[in-house]
Length: 269
Ligand code: ADP
Ligand code: MG
Image 1 (cartoon, rainbow, N blue to C red):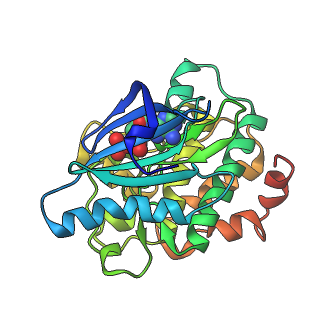
Image 2: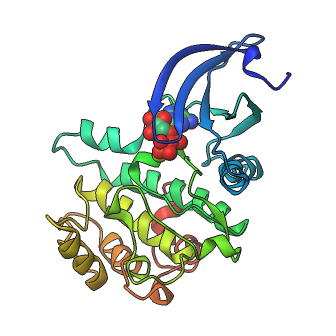
C-alpha cells in the first residue's frame, strides 16, 4: 500500500489530545479497521524529531501485548501513525464501567500478566514507556491487553531520558521523578503497580486534594491497604512494586520469572 491518507477512508474521530487527533479508519483496499494518530508537527527541527520518536519506537516494537504498528507517513505538516485498532477501549473506561463491582482476581491477573509481557518486551528493547496508566492501556475486542500511546517513550541512556517533564495526570509518577532523579525502567514498574492497584480496587493508590500531599504520599509509598480477599501474592507484589527506592523494586523480568508471583501469573497466561 502507498503511504498516504488517500489510501484510507476516515470513519470517525475517536480521540482528541494536545498532539492532534486519533481517527478510526479503513483502508480502501481491505476491510480491516485501524487507528491513525494525526500529530501536528512542531515548527522546530528538534520538536519534529521528538514527535517522530513515537513512530520510530512503535515501529520497532512487535509483541502481542503492544499496539501493532502498520505504517507512518508525513504530509502537510502532520505526522500520521497508523496502528492496530483496539475496539475494547482503554482500561480507564473499563474501570469506570464497573461502578463499584470489583473485577475478579482471575481478570486482574490475566490483564496484569499481559501488561507485564508487553512492558518486558519494551524494556528488553531498551525503551522506556514513561506514561503507563490505565488510559494508555487498551483492550482488543477479544480481550487482549495492548500497551499503547508511545508519545512519551524514549530510548534508555539517551540524553533525553534525563530531560523528563511530565505533562499528564500525576497519579502514576514515581518518587524518584518527584525527586528529580532520572527516569528508569523501575519508574515504569511503579506506574504498572498503580494500574494493578486500580484493577484491584477501582481507585488510585495515591490520591490527595493537593499536589503537595500527593507527592508526600508517593514519596512515602503510603497507600490504602488492599481488600483482604485478594491473594497474599498480590499484597506482596504491590508492596514490592511500591518500594520508594527504585533499586528495591523488581524489574519486569523478576516479576515474570524468579519472583514468587510468577507462578500465579503463569497460570493466567
Ligand atoms: P494522547 O494520550 O497523547 O492524547 P493516545 O495515543 O493515548 O494519545 O490517543 C488518544 C486517545 O485515542 C486514547 O485515549 C484512545 O481513546 C484513542 N486511541 C488511541 N490509540 C488507540 C487504539 N490503538 N485503539 C483504540 N483507541 C485508541
Ligand atoms: Mg494517551
